[in-house]
Length: 281
Image (cartoon, rainbow, N blue to C red; front, side, top):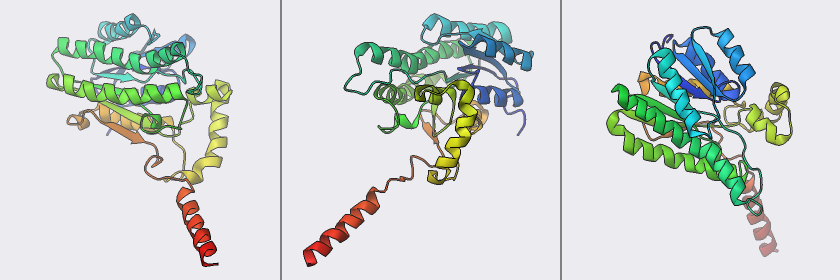
């Protein structure tokens, strides 16, 4: 339904590209006013020109608590209130394997991917309480929040920790009518994904098409994801249709975590047949 977020004000971090940008576009379509926090100021300026009066950009490094607090204050000063906080900003962090991952690299990764989520909860929840209203806090988790092997050690550790933030926040903030939920995207080709692979952001779309041709057959739903797929889930969690949902992490992954495409089961069967054949001989 059009106007699903009519009258609502949202803060979206990491909103100038990828999943964040797709969510900004959809939220505006559905009637929201949006404050975008990011460090890509040129892209932020373009968004303001594209959505005059509906989008306000503010430079924000989410590893700095004061800048996260500033995003919330900017939303209230510009649009009068806050209804939705989407903790979406992120990056790959330290890519070292666990044998080489040092405390400094791990700390940086945790600060960006987990600490910023805590800060987003803290400042958004304080504003909701000050307003005397309920509110929705949404966070981008990952398939790496559930299983190892999807990304680097630091990223996996940090994204696992995000689930703890969501569950704790649900318990502590539910009495105020504040909901905290997360979305775990599957394979979504964004600059965050391509940068650790050594690809420039300008080649993201080209690589998405290439990867789609390679991986569509390994997806339960037959295709890799698009930022819009995640934005649709964020829209639901931001809207009044999800007012009795909190503390959950929703995989939006085309069935990736539900269905294994490993050949291990078949390999075991083949090994058993070989073994029995050898024993019979």
